[in-house]
Image 1 (cartoon, rainbow, N blue to C red):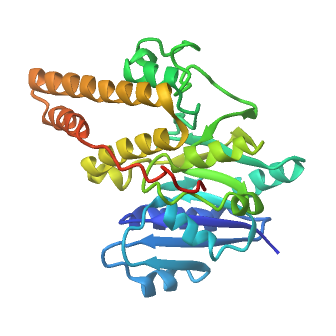
Image 2: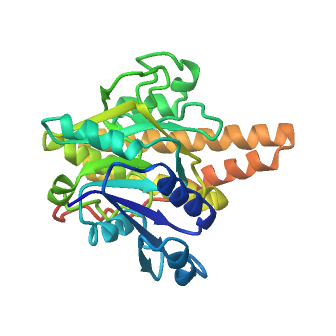
Length: 315
């Protein structure tokens, strides 16, 4: 019996992947686990070298980038554990967290998804949970109210920066960098919805789980380092474009009528404002990077994905 299947997606992130796998070997004990790495079309990925370096890791090789959701589902196809952990390749363990979270979940009578406290490389706290997207949350985000009132429970509900947890608490969405889930529940949900390519797939998965009565717990006492943006930050347009596509796709799938139209309008107003602010500040301060970010926000105004969820059977 395998207690835990660890599924890691890699795409042109070999240095982070090596550090992640080494930390798993260093810290993990008292639990029977398997590690599955799905490479999503990395250029010149040397499978033989990786197998020699990590003989206990199961490698799944995709010839092209199938997207985060589809690649995780490929990992699920070979996973054998009672629990599944979706783990980013740009993470590093600092304790025997897998055993700790496994033991915690085993004591809970009802099925749960569990997330941990994500840390930056300097060990400062990183945003680890958010609320589900809503019309109000979209308004406070795109009108920068969460920036103006960072400690407000009313204006900063989406990012929850005003909250500082030390004990387990129920949440809406745990970040996809660390998602600890019962395998049977993941199977009943048919895994990730692979119509999402990159971004919002974990939000959709959490939404479907809670809609079926599931509980999502944030366990801040357990921590892991998450570098964040290790691959996407190398190509900012890829990152920004897919963030917009993922958000709009989530709205297409879970919103309708007045709420859908309103949240889309608010989203594009937010893109326009960010474009104006970044370009203006970039010009005033002679900051090329800010001007480029502003240009990418303007460019997102012309991004709108086809509704692949319309008139189709939901996952």
